[in-house]
Structures are given as structure tokens and as C-alpha cells.
Image (cartoon, rainbow, N blue to C red):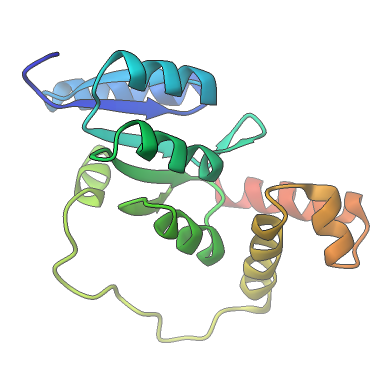
Length: 177
């Protein structure tokens, strides 16, 4: 095992992984890459990582489902969930499942490093109420999470056509990037 802490970076976006790995390297942080659930389990079994950056959506697989597996393989692992599809429902679920933090892409390396630091102050709360679109998105994410990411089951639970739900999810993902 190396002397410096090793991070496990899990994301299905190769370009993002390469940029993040180079940026962390400049900070003196060694990292290993994984692009799927299986690669993540293998990487964690091969080397004792200290910290993990876990994407919420891994090419159709849920990072939230992988999170407890990672922690069972290494209970000392600090996992930060990173996503381009942020919602309160998934943030709460990530924390409930053992994540130390939850950040929305894009992030800088400094923001990522700060995401692993303990919170000394309470979070900033919004002064204005959420918009109707934000409330709808939160509700969709909560129901999607309740259905383990199954779009068809979520559409049925929302009494919405599956294609309509897919369009809403796709539209929101483009808006977030």
C-alpha cells in the first residue's frame, strides 16, 4: 500500500475521471479509477482506499445501490457522492446510506477536497421558497428513488406516461450540465 492516502474515483465518464485524477495528482493525491460497480468492487478489494468519489449514475447502475457494498468492503472508507442530477431526495438517501457528503457537478478540486472536511457551520438555507419546477423535480427524484431507479415503475406511481417522465429526466439533466 502507498504512503499517501489513495482515493477511489468511480464514474462512467472517462474524460471526467482522467481530468479528476490529474487534478488530484497535482494535490499529491494518488487515485484509482473504476467505471462500473464491478470495477469499483475489484479496485477496493485490490487496494485499501481511504476516500471515494462515487457518481450517482453509472451508465444505468445506481451509485446509491453500490454505496453500502463499498462500505461493507471497507467500513473506514469516506464516500462522497457526486452527481449531475442533484436532488434533496437523493442527497438524503446518500447520507442515510453512509456518504459523508453529496455534491453536484461541476465541482472544482478545492470544492471536492472541502466536501470531505467536517462541517463546522450549519448549511446556508435558502431565503426564497423552491420553484414549482424544483418541487416537481424533488418529488420525481423521491419516487424514482423509492422505485430503485426504475423509470417504468416510477411513471406508473406518478400516473404519468413513461416517455413523458423520460423527457422530464432528460430535460433536467441537460439543464444541470
